[in-house]
Amino acid sequence: MQNTDGINADSLDVLVTRLFPRSRARVQRPMTGGSSAVMTAIDLDLAEGGGRTVVLRQCGGANLAADPNAARTEYQLLRALSDRGLPVPQALHVDESLELIDAPFLIISHLDGRPDYAPTDPVHAARQMAGFLAGLHTIDVESDDLAFVVRPVDGPGYLEIERSALPEVFLRGHDLLEAAWPAGNPNRPCLLHGDLWPGNMLWQDGELTAVVDWEDASVGDPMVDLAIARVDMSWSFGFEAMEVFTTSYAELTGFDLSALPLWDLRAVLRQVPHAADYAEGWRELGRLDIAQDVIQSCHLQLTEKALAAL
Image (cartoon, rainbow, N blue to C red):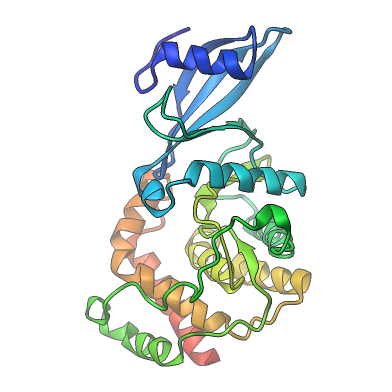
């Protein structure tokens, strides 16, 4: 096997032998794009002939601090979602022993597709995202195989940034949100992805093939996911696609979206002080058109829309 930095070759050979008897790890390749976990693609020569690629996903420190069982939690969730036919990686193995690698990890299937940060047809992409999110949110969270998913008693806090960190133009939104929180959930609790943005979706030929990175999953108000997706979509896909996404989701779920303006405010205000960082991240992804002023403009438009609705 070709040796690369990051994973001990002998340990990897032992792991592959355990999971795929008489097979051989031909090469391992670090995967880029993730920040919460270390991802390594492993190309295999299978004993029965042919090849296969799997992904070794090592949990990051932040995730383990939040959930010491993060690897097993994600493994169980991916199994449950796969069983329901959702487009997610197949969970093949989980190991929390630290015997082979110095972090808990899971082995998942390698999927075709890659993130598309500038789709040629953003409205079509938005409708597909709405279909996925509606399917996720209509899962029965009382099923026995989802009993392990975290269910915060109070839900997420209304804001994670100090009022003093916000430009004056956003203070009215902050004050309204603070006075109105908690938003209240007229819908039933749903299974949430927790970070639905273009970097966590894989596409091939304009079609959504998978949604990845489930470490922020929980059970809660479906408007959490909807608002997070809307904010990033406002500058990456555009406002027309964002509205199509929202309308399609509402039609597919029949959910009450009356509290969405409050969740939009929460999603926006959490990002406002970090607009420059977001712009730098999007530049690194090849979207030179998403500058800081563009993100700030979208934040302001979403805030004004939310205030008008409230």
